[in-house]
Image (cartoon, rainbow, N blue to C red; front, side, top):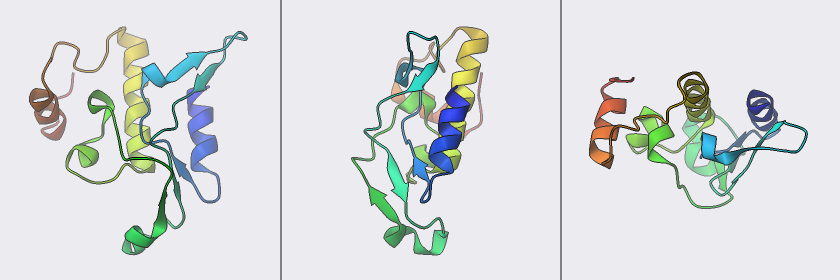
Amino acid sequence: DVLKGVEYLHTRQPPICHGDLKSLNVLVNSSYHAVITDFGSARSKLNTNAEEKNASELTLTGPLYTLRWAAPEVLAGEESDLPSDMWAVGWICWEIVTGKMPFEELHLEGPIVWHVVKGKLP
């Protein structure tokens, strides 16, 4: 269900980047279907041409993200984009398989960022 929801967002014209995908933003409805919520960081991509990046993004709300699910490029200061949504989907799948949140043993931002940027993933 989550992948279908992300596919729906990413195939709109223009595509929509959720920007804050994580398990905490996925709810299960009464029909036992997973539903993506919290579109507070979502953006519509008016034009996906990287050369026109500044003029191509319409920000629907602020650029907030959740550190544990953030892609390396986002932690390096880039804006969330469709690939960073897919990175977060990978972590959601990892949570389903392991029953753990990403980096749940780490309690400070610095070590989480270091692990992601250096590729030291669980």
